[in-house]
Image (cartoon, rainbow, N blue to C red):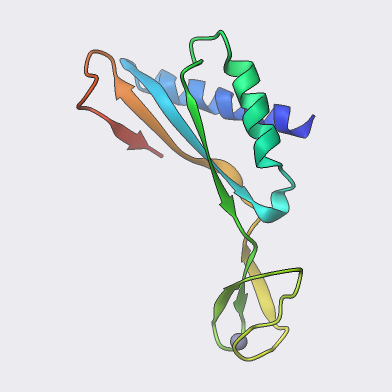
Length: 126
Ligand SMILES: [Zn+2]
């Protein structure tokens, strides 16, 4: 399953990141998934929860940011969301548009908390 591999890479990235920040533990990891990345957010969440279960990262929450496909018009500079593969510029109707986002598959953020401080000390790392 495609999503299982992605869930594993996300966890690997979290563990690498945690190695750089001793004394902290991760509470939430965010991933950005583009519409064209062919990843099913629900399957990804399911796989993620299955592999963190009964590990030290069991309490880690997964946040998913879904990014629609966006194009920018080469003529008027308009940026718009593409629906149903129709990449015409809605402002000037040209087909001369270029894809600027929608194929993301990346770690967006990681929220960590410091051991011993349950209230203060919440911060995000990129
Ligand atoms: Zn245009």
